Image 1 (cartoon, rainbow, N blue to C red):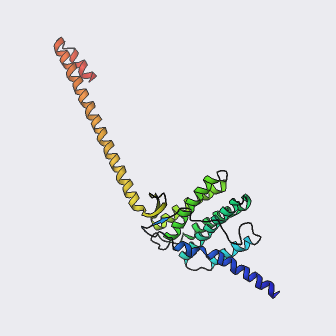
Image 2 (image 1 turned 60 degrees about the vertical axis):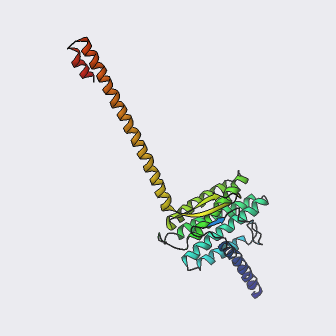
Length: 258
């Protein structure tokens, strides 16, 4: 009995370590505020021992959830949730490469659930919360990888749903951080991320709308001026014709028509 407990305890520790491992690697490649980072497919296929087709996969997921539950720092808990979601994408890539669509779908469903859980964790944070930008950057990286996978496997509807879920969660992060990550392609064809404040984008958009509105108003004024000029010219022509004919009864008719 004691040996069985030791074995189970060892499995739990391994599963826990496997869930926590990728976090440190991500921190080294983080863009940070106003920084850039290469996002050229930075999620490699999962190469661990407990993948989505493993009989103890459910135990691994349970340990990840337990790890998040006992993480009392709210920001760190969100980062762990997003990192565990990243691990699901790595598992999906492995399962799809082995043509195991059923287990890939299982990992995609867990990815969706994790994003929903992360969205719920964002509620207590204020608009000026710090420490969320890194997690938002990770979600943006998810999108790039999921988009490539969706092109590679166009018949997989689960990938499309996962991509849309990541877009929705990134928007929720943006409401908290007041930032967004714009994608840029460098001369070396590397796709990089750059953190941009949302208020800058909104101000530029407002400025553009104001400029377009001013231009439209000026065009309308010019059209009105042209119409007034045409009407004046028409009145003068009709008035000249009336004077030439010498008919006094025609003048009221011209004024009435005018």
